Length: 329
Image 1: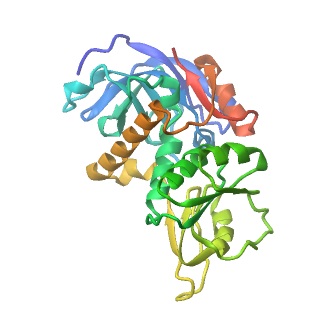
Image 2: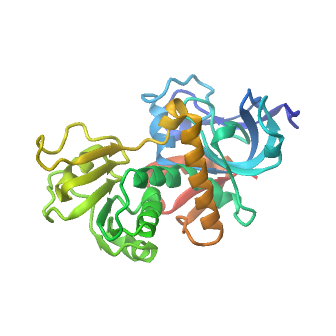
């Protein structure tokens, strides 16, 4: 391992509260990478809804002092055993597990297999905004067999995952309908949606538009996805990005729908090297597309590291539009 330049750094730590405002900015020891890991000096941090949702503790087994956060971008400054020297000094974006210290710090330890090499032309803030929403979108669209010209509906298309889903689906030749608040319509059409319809559906609503879609990718909730099943043709595909559908939405041997769930974090617990190679390859291709404006990121809203806790609470309260990114340095 190469020596780290500092013994301590600043990190936002969890103190047991579900409130983002209870996060505490502390000076703590710089972590040391173990075998197969690297130490990244963070330049920017991407904030995601999961970052505040997880603070209640129901999804994780944290102790006070844990550093939250899953997305970041920066420079590799130290290597654990078994990691190629080629990584040292590289500019990288990354996504890490909820079950280890994360990105809300000046430095983070990351598995080498989860690193995404950044193109020289791409800035750190855009790269930090990328991993969770874009890799989730890629996992979701990969669930659907490619059939150019087939109609595909994306519900909850106005968010960060939808930003990438619309573009990835259109690039594969699907005729995309985006379901989102009307204020997102012009942006989603510019990204490749052939049509935009209002949504999400109210709790009491059932789909009344007829069974006309080959696939539906839902980024709202498991319950919403179940209601969206009424939009599918026979042998269609229902992909649930948020939560999962708890009951099969059709009778046996009827519509014969296929159902899929998506969870990027599952790879950290169950993914083998081959699965990570596929994801990393796709991620680096998309980063290159971002660098050359062939793929459009969500508009970024940037605030300083010292404002992270308030920024995360503003995300929880939906006090702004766009993708939140924290500038570390």
